[in-house]
Amino acid sequence: MSATEQSTRSAGIADTRSPLRLSPVLIILAALLSGCEEKQAPQAAAPPAPPVTVAQPVKRTVTDWDEFTGRFDAVQQVQVRPRVGGFITAVEFRDGAFVKEGDLLYLIDARPFEAVATQAEGQLSDARAKVELAKRDLERGLALVQTSAVSEQLVDQRRQALQAAYAAVTQAEGSLKAAQLNVEFTHVTAPISGRVSRHLVDLGNLVQGSEGNSTLLTSIVTLDPIYVYFDIDEATYIKYNKLWFEGKRPSSRDTPNPVQVSLTGETKPSRNGTINFLDNQLDVSTGTLRGRAVIPNTDLSILPGQFGRVRLIASAPYEALLVPDTAIATDQSRKILFVVKDDNTVEAKAVVLGPLDEGLRVIREGLKPEDRVVVDGLQRVRVGAKVTPHEAKPAPAGGKT
Image (cartoon, rainbow, N blue to C red; front, top):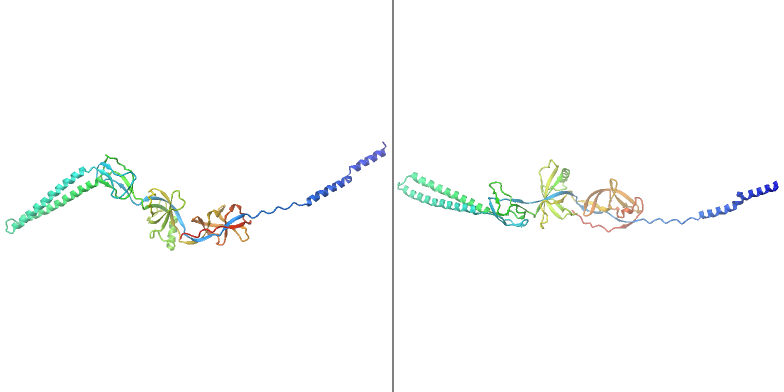
């Protein structure tokens, strides 16, 4: 092959591999790709605004209450002890039963006391006989002194003997009464009506009377009504005093202020009562003031020693805004409510909470009566985002005054 042919073939190969020979294909591919890019995918539809339930705050008259831990105690409690000593001959009550005043509880052997009473009766009869003899002696002396048959001195002696006889009668009557009381005291009866404890002395045991260390036989406590004692801290006591000076709350010393009591396990108060005692000084070891309320216990279900929660009136009645407690959210240390504005966007409002009142939470600051508060669907709201509000059923408007 000549050099010219090689040169020609080399030039042909070079022409075949040149980009200028491939450009039509590339142009077609580029056109197809650009056409695909120009076709835009349909845009996704925006999600609908989440539904929430809203309600305006409930406006009603409320009263604040403070809560304390209390312990129930009997209005009357008696330790039953014998007033005379002797052997127990009978136990006449059932342990834990309810007894009435005057019911027989124990019998003590009365024979020694009956013998003493019989002896006292004899001494009284003897003293009365001596009075009659002294009367007759004095009458005779008075008749004889008129004729000077006896001296005035003898008459005076007989008058003094009559007075001594009267004194002996009085002494014998006292001895007999004491002996009869001892016989009566052998019947140990219930001094009050109430529930009796178990018997602490069995039949046949010797008990000591009131002249020595008397033996404890049992105890009785009254149940209806019943006391509940509680301790008020110093800050609360100062608050109550301030309210009293301002005329916003009557003093419990002068007025039987109402209290509400809930027992252990109860979620709301079940008993009502009144304050009937405040101590005259604060306990220096605890800084608290002891208070007492009296509670009806007609069903006898409360026993002394039980614990309870005591709610005491803490303010004058006032108008307040209330919302369900479940509508309140927490943002770090703040309490907030989500409020739906006129354009259906959500706004967070910081609020100051008050106490619970019949299942609703008092809002002291940060809320307006016309605000639409999110009460259901809090997990679906975001501040600034739109929502679809639905009105909730209005809450009952009743309240404590």
